[in-house]
Length: 282
Length: 225
Image (cartoon, rainbow over all chains, first blue to last red; front, top):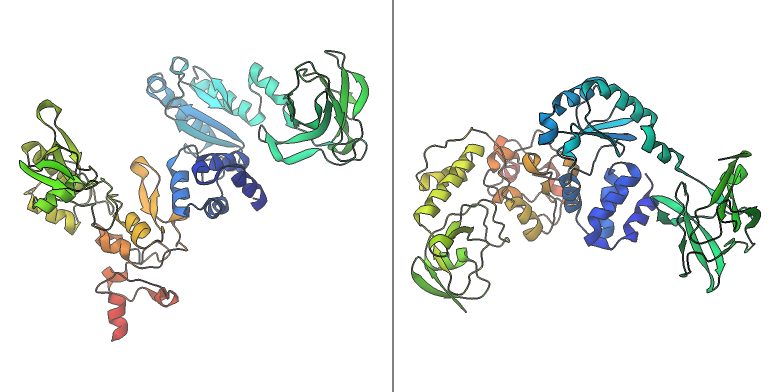
């Protein structure tokens, strides 16, 4: 746990009124609320530790114990219950050898029961890492656990697998383009400068591969072309490649200290991109 | 000034006065448990219910939190009020029968039996100690934790709080306190050594600004001898 990270989260929000969102952000980062973090929140926001602790223990969404990498929730609401959720939960308990709310000793899976997921027609329902399994039977429990451990969740889980965080740097001066003070989707963003018709300003893109939004300082039309510049050395990042989707020039950055190259389309509204890692194009 | 009628008696009270204060001012007794002068009203115990309004629109409210309104008609001892109050007493007895305070209230209202499953809780969550700690001792060392059946009162993380001065104020106001002794687990919130007649408060000397509420304090008595 790093104090600076937590201080960042606290200072991003507006003090006392935002205590729940601060705790949510901390929990998202650490999967649980460490004791030191709660103490820090108390001193920084001016709330008493008692109040912070009261909030943290009141809401079921917060956990004071470390949670596993994956989260499996089985619904025990009325509809799921009458459709046999009890036996499904019992099977999970047996297979994972834990009680609801606990985490496996290898810190992989946290299993919990919830009271309703609002999808009663699909019951008994089990959610693992945001993926809904409908009409779960005792027999499927094993597969769900396996899929959860491996992080594979069938068809619509597959697209998620491409999401990973990239460490981008300037190909000219080699300095990091990661902006740790500005998060997009829970990861630090990549920040470069861009020249547009209305002037030069910053542009931020998610460091998460699989998400291609562009956030700009200036308001420009969706089809505007941007000239990417390194914020450190000012060199033009435009490469020779053309976008596969709209043929516009592409901005190029080094990835993970030079093991790969990411090119993103310089057109504001285009999600065109090419990622080359160790010579292989993804 | 606001004019209201309590048990048929017209009274003028200042704006912001609660029904409880007005009724007590006029001499109508209303039993309370979680109410304490000098602490903010909380409305947890529901012992102080009174009936307001007329006919079908009449309803029960907790008088300690309900501010007096112009033309309000209050009945502090109607049949409905007494019935509700006796039910509250039965529920209190069901959860914490060993409390002297609750026993006294029950005896005053002639409640000899309760019809629920008997439990022996050592806390009725009236919140007196929490308010005492926050409002009179300016400490905020203890507070509510969890929710539902898991709700409890104590310090964060169940360890001695940095801001607790061991003043004993929480125990002094607690209606169920006799069973709150945690002397065998000294890391808990309150030492409560009073109950087992051994010298508690060993750390007392560390606190120069301590305000002690234990009277008589067993520790002080023993040390004197």
